[in-house]
Image 1 (tube, one colour):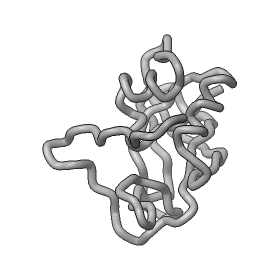
Image 2 (image 1 turned 30 degrees about the vertical axis):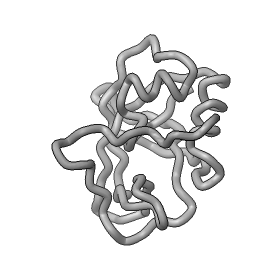
Image 3 (image 1 turned 180 degrees about the vertical axis):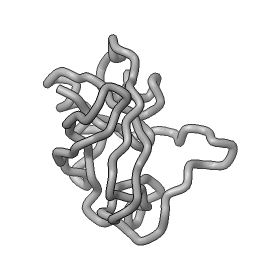
Length: 124
């Protein structure tokens, strides 16, 4: 199955750690139309909010069922999986992505210097 990543899990090392193993395939660039990447209320992590005319850049990864369960555990109960349609260099594709439970109206900005955020330190 395919998963769309748009936040901290874009980092290949972080993805491999959270998914239990690195992906064998290279990530594919993907765009989610009619959404914005915003702050999750009470956190410094991103989530999605529907927004006509906006788009979210991210990557598409292949995962198996075990990896998906591990990623859901990392995301916690604040994020739920949703099905989305994406634009990719290979054409339109469908995937799963995780959406937070409390999107704010504030755009999420990656940390200064374009560094990937530190993964949440918690046991999962």
